Length: 468
Ligand SMILES: Cc1ncc(COP(=O)(O)O)c(C=O)c1O
Image (cartoon, rainbow, N blue to C red):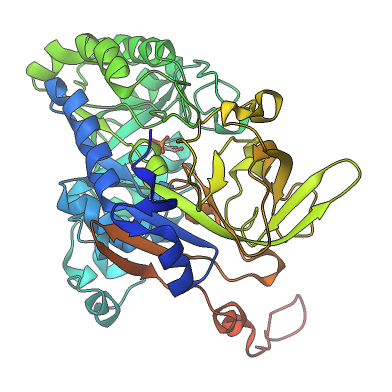
């Protein structure tokens, strides 16, 4: 299920006991396995090989520079949704031509930096610190995924001003229900994402030949994670029909970007394997891909989620009248998915000598099928919110202060959504590769949280009738 295994009573990431990492860098800490990342990337690549699909890693899933570099070394392009992610992809070594710039609210400044490196917020010296070339010399991003006509108007204006050409795909809202959490449903007509399918042809007619723009194709991303296969097939049917219509109108579609959302098993057997998705999707596109259609994917979760765990240390155990609370130093500030989406993450002690525990959701009801002597508890963090929990009503071996817990499937949308709430520094990140462990992000010190508040700057603002 995961590349993290218990050996000799201790949870290992590749060859390294997680406990040793916690001793060395403290907790809470994200631990990633490079072996698992490589395996997940290759598995996706193999599944979609008949389409010769170009994989663009969705940086938002886990944006650490060193993880991005690892994915670059495997050949991944980068899918970014902000100016910050764009610069990160650049620092990770991605050529601009292999970056797709998506996102629903791109600002003028972000568009400028994506079109012309002279507008990058990074100086040559800053880029050099990370071993990257001077951004000033770079060209425009490979493709924009465009979400609205208003955005297209701004891209055209800025590209013309800079003498650049913006290649773009229009994001289609296919009005398909992906049957996932409402907050991560992105392809229904009431969602803010994409352009309604019946408006796409008109947008292409108006903007397809505009100065500064080059229309390439269509993009669709219906949600994340998408636990069923059919919604993809439905969305693809919508975009293929559109592609044919655009072709007839003289706007050939040369690129089809299917987005991300490929699921992972947060619990045993909960979703079909990626190969089953590919089996259904490949035949829909194979002939067109052979005919020259470029197929892009933007996977994030499916590469990173089960390649990382969050390691937290128990601070206190409180046995109350209604519940037992295992209070640890990881919580909604380190991993917000349980609080935000009521997402399930399997949690188990790092020290465990019993049989491999089962990843089951109703662990309290069934005793988890893990054996006797378990105690039903809520695993919570230190944050002053009742919503601050990592797991509720779980059967765990009785926990004691000082013991370590591993929160599984935390490698995607864990660190990237961590916050400083209640003035906690963000966790450390460690990348394990075989028998080597490296800190790829130091724990954020309190001084870093305070740095932008170190001084006060008077604003001299013009007000009507009062000179500035
Ligand atoms: C447009 C787009 N592409 C790709 C992704 C990555 O999705 P996932 O991490 O589920 O693969 C997302 C995530 O929400 C997204 O919004």
